[in-house]
Image 1 (cartoon, rainbow, N blue to C red):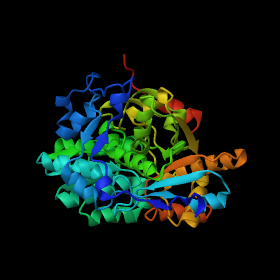
Image 2: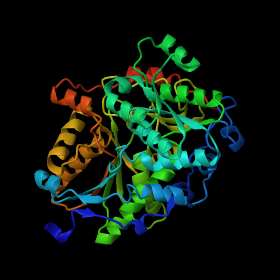
Image 3: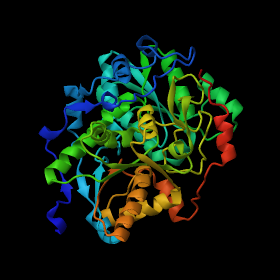
Length: 456
């Protein structure tokens, strides 16, 4: 076998990390605080507790604790699907004719089909520990809603999911998995909430956005006794939970005596990229190593590459806290023709600050090229990839071809967030050549930027 490096590198159950990593403890420039949407003042723990779970709120606001112990019950749940393998993509390398070594961390080995379960079980555990009856949430492509419904079923919690309407219609099978696990799934925007009815009145016929769905889920959580709202990306706590990915990658690389050169992850709200990359960024912040890290986002929802670094609402209805992040504006609604996920208008405050400080670069790619890369990966590596992580596959292929041109051999680490078996409608569009590329115009973005809040 080439280079005598195994196809798959597995850690043992005893090698699963027992702590999550908080990169904020190593950041010189901390993320700006969340703001109360009513007062525009930094959000306190007491103000957050009626919306989110108390233990998660403490983690959300903690800029100093570097390591958080993973509860034993969560660790035991992790052992159903973790550790996940780090796989050398020999067949993709051969197809590209590249001297680069490509490794992918595959997070699809669980029923939910994605990395989202890493945080879903942690958040559901905190809700159960607090004695809550259930939780509400939003979901875009459906990966988060699927993962949360699975975690809630395991712990006996009720789960109410508001699913972006176009995804609800395009991805019926993921919706049915949620219902199989007992979740109540509502297309958003809906007429079941005040915010939903307001959005429908202002945008008749809208296909929805994550911002819309967040507003509805938060409204229901606030108005329903015994419920709290949980979120699958963007928030600091979610990135902390997801560091199980990057920490496992570090251990696996040590096991085979290799070092990463380039780390590539897709970026929508930040959960996958943050989970994969922040343990490595921590090394950079501490002066221990240097890596090239690339965030890849869709050209149709380009928060990093075309957004503004500013305070903005996390939801369309403007009832959620404000975060300082790279944003397209809370009123921005991605085109319904975009089938590749990663539809949130903003980006994690942690990643936004790190990007602003130059710790990594960002790239926007068009969806037809994304599915072209997904098809090649499926044909060579035998896994049908999730459209979201196929953005990262696209850039991994591009970087591997650059190595072919230069003759350099670099180790490229790819975050493969999960499988695409529930996303076959999008693959159908690509195969039928009915898929199009949509790029928001400068006028589209200017109209949305004009509605950004003014923070003095």
